[in-house]
Image (cartoon, rainbow, N blue to C red; front, side, top):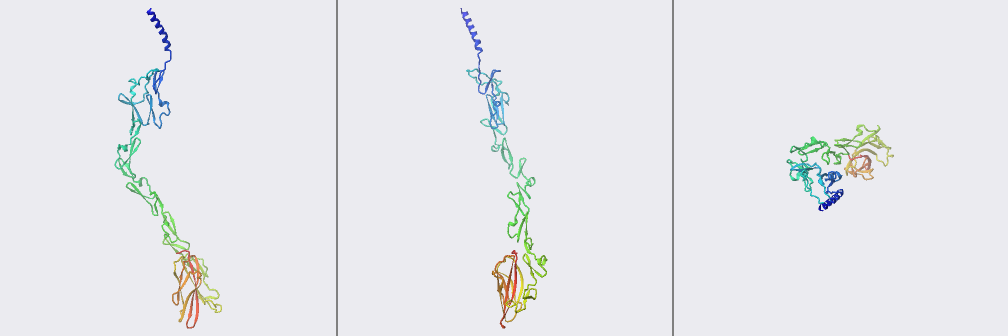
Length: 417
């Protein structure tokens, strides 16, 4: 009877088990892994392949067991294998699947897979890993890890450093030697002179260095002083020239000298005219200036021979001409008159009879037979003044008075030279 019961239980048990074997069984993996139905075990997820933007800022994505790392592109990754370091190129090891509601086993891998851990970071030369396993540049200049020569300056670069010489020098092996900028660069516009560690530019005559100290700019000599030229200064590249107005010629490269057209024959006076030169030009006057009732007795003297026609008129008129520059300083003695005939027991007086309405002149008696015409105001030209200077003679014994007139034509030039 006991065997029957046992056999019945076995039959019932064998009937139940097949039903339970066909029920589906699910498995779960740790984070960073997924279940492989073919191999029936968990395998690592390659996030670097699945996620396009797994890492930001130009960092490179390195797949890791159950996750991934974002490292600089200069980082070199090695994994340890029994004390050796090899590039981590093998795929991540699979992890056995665990049924649900079962405690997950600790992540301990077989010896064949244990070679992939632990993970170590080796940075490229010039970089070092920080506490976050990120490769950072080494500042060799700040840490003193450089070998610059005397006089050279250390400049840190990404992953290295450079040694530079001061301006005007260049490296020759481990020394700084002078650069001859005049031969290598020719920086000056005109003339270059090499100096130790530098150079100097000089400009040609009539030029000066521009603010950049290498270019040359023209010197405007005309702006230095109004005395550069007597009349007009013309600036030219590297120099200047003086010009004179019409009627003048340049003398000594600065002064203007009047051209005497009457002597050079460059006038247009007629045969019956007299050419009179003045400062800057010429005038043509009739050779016979006498008007009725006067007749000409000499080149410049006119006499009235008819007492009836010349009543109230001076018995004689003498014509004179003179030239002066414009703006002449005053007072200035400009013309002297003197009696040609001297008689005993006579007394002479002098006066300006006409042509001095604005008071430009003053006649000062010098002696009994002479007087001086004085300029009292600066005159502007070109202009012509005609002044009648009269000498009155008193005959003391005969109680007789006579007069004569000197008609002076004063021609004022256009300029003060």
